[in-house]
Image 1 (cartoon, rainbow, N blue to C red):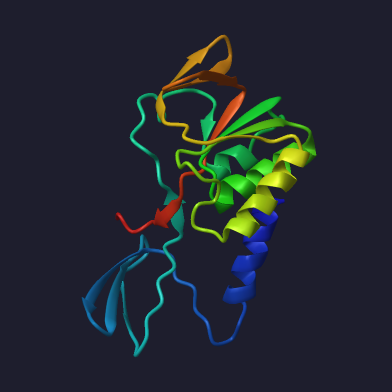
Image 2: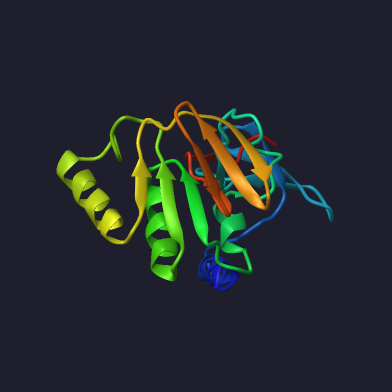
Length: 185
């Protein structure tokens, strides 16, 4: 489903007569010109306005074990799982974490959100955040606030999430700590 929707969105743009989609690695020559490096040939593009869609990638917090422990996923990896996790842990209670918590709870997974802040959805209006928390709890989602994760490990086919005050064992852990533009290269 995800690949189908991505492909459909791509073609919604690429098939328009006034849009050219060019794959490659680009660098600015000046404010109105780009050099695009492609396997077949380099290309220079000039325009009054240039839009570059680099996509986004998961912000991975500096927690020991987060990149080396089996069963830890970003949103794309989690959607590619072949089996539904019995218990899904979600590191981060922002919009990505909330979306996946609701979805996987409705699919039948037990879900636990681990939020480092002292408030759930701290950037949102309190009434809205409180209502969303109530809806999630009604769906069976556990929300743990002030969850300062110290390390992540793997034991007996489960991801072990170690925090200051507790340890949580889950079948899969979603990193939902934010997104950043994919502009590193």
